[in-house]
Image (tube, rainbow, N blue to C red; front, side, top):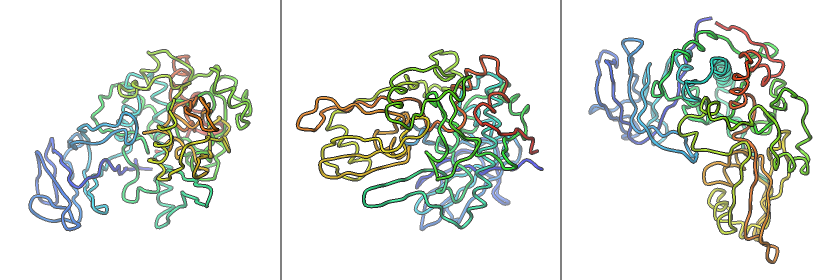
Length: 434
């Protein structure tokens, strides 16, 4: 099999500014230097003319272009803009009333950036190899899923009079394979400095993917599972994969209390149980956390406090629903890692159950809660109305699949990448696709 290519949606806007660092071509036209395109009459205005799309092609493999003002960490607490540089083809298309910039390149070149963008390029070789295999697997699984869903719109929201269940995956990417932000895999071109070690990890695992029963694994990952990996259906559609099961992130994989039971979940979350990802070792954390990620602290166990006014205002703003004063946040259903799948918001004006995990995280935070594995403490109650809420939680991210911090610890403890992968993807097989 020949190495596939991938299309990555980088940014959208009414105007997109970009710079060709080398000579690119558009048909017979040679283009270089600073450029600007804008939306005009539903088409692309560039260089004094209107186009339905623009495809700029590099002349050499190392040729690059720079996109100005790319937003990273979309809707996360460290959201910001930066200029980013990419190799490969630049394509501009119209999506609604905005332009979208798409980068097309080979998968192995794409992975070189993803590994350096998702974590520090100074990570251990075994951790980098692990991430190369899961990123390659996830990407190919999404491309296959895209083809299978061509022309179909999958259900991702279920609404009744007393319940809103919504999940977020990739169904909004109709014109490219994946996006460049944390919604898919963090991809920042050659903006993040790579190292010979990253290149070595990509080369050593070239074409390797995880499979289960002959199918490419949908190999998910998150920053910190909080001690137990979550199942797929807690976060996305109601299917579960055998290789994404609930396991403890330690040598004792099956030693897990039933965290679907509220009493057990509270005891687990309010303690600090042993796990690979239970570490404060700055050297290990620096392998996974880039400079802006290190602005986040205390993610294995964390707490967030809101006044009544803050919480009621936040929920009203994020949900679009006026619940009045918030009486309680009641766990309705938890997954095996203790993450909330359904949470009932009880207010003086309305009661509604919301889910799944990301919808809960988005509703209860100006950006995102670290995870939905939390318990609720009501304080200063007067006439049945708490004046203060404290959320005590565990982990960072959805917790499905590979735990990046746990994998970093395993690498430091001498596990090779195959052992790391098969710890997080139980029963999977590592195969060479090309």
